[in-house]
Image 1: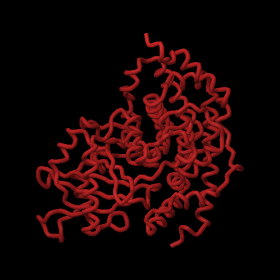
Image 2: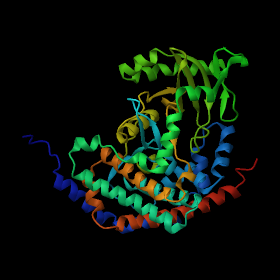
Image 3: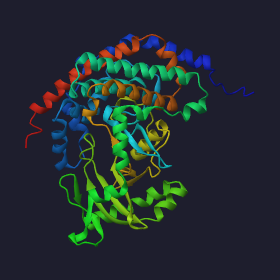
Image 4: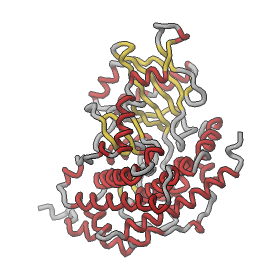
Length: 440
């Protein structure tokens, strides 16, 4: 019917995936090639920290020095460089980019329901699908060690995660395409760590944030509320800085859908503050904006968060990331999530790129201690399912299913990789602690 346009058949798409096993066998995913490192991890970190707020870079290092998992959270650029040293499948998907156990969490969907999904996309980019799985594998081992598990149990959790991923990807390969796009992961709330995160999210309402982050101006009862000063994580900024932040909302409003723009127009800004967030993002510029709608009991909090280039960009020259890093994050998030924050958007200020989203609106994440006992394996299974859904929405589940095939060889290889990379992360963490970068 369309003689000049060839669209691959399902059989051709599955065969493409199967053929990639010749490029990289499933049993080869347990390998590392760290002898090929051309830069020490501390030098890589220093490179990506250029341009950050100097006073906060030491805080970032101190957070990373607290534990191997804390180091891992801030060292995505190191792992990106290490992954680039080993062969990949060439099967591309939208990557979360920083797939680890603390970057899945609960949040409010546009219809007000609480959902649980991947919720951090600062490093998102189009790249080899297995890179997300390898980062998740290492995180499960590190989090397992920190929550009291032996390596054999942590490795089994990795294999559970990957088996869950493979099972669901095979299911997606047999489903109608539109059903894949709107697929919901069920029974998710019955998993204890997820249940705990949903309870935290239920309590994290805008009025709760109002009480936690603001206070009456001048301490006078009944006065308009302003952000508290909670150094170093929440600090006041000058009036001139506030005006610049509010002016940056102009381009943001223009990219919102008309109905979202209308909702935002009913809120008036009351105050702006600087906030320190996360671990890897510490040192980047991050602002909180407090709005009121129908009076003081109708607060809205937006976060305007600086976005740098993805840590994977130097190693994926053909990925064609968006020229605007806030836009890159938004588009990657929408590609992988079934439902996203209704106020998600992007803007720019002083030549820097920013993501805009709601702050703390029904958000809740797991804590490492939630993974003690049976929590690790149960949560690992959910991690695999959510990554499979995100990759299937943004890639070709038939090709991925063709590559994964039957058997447990792929899961076993990722289990080996998780332990190997966790071991290396601990060595790199010790090097940071010895470096003097975390001395007060």
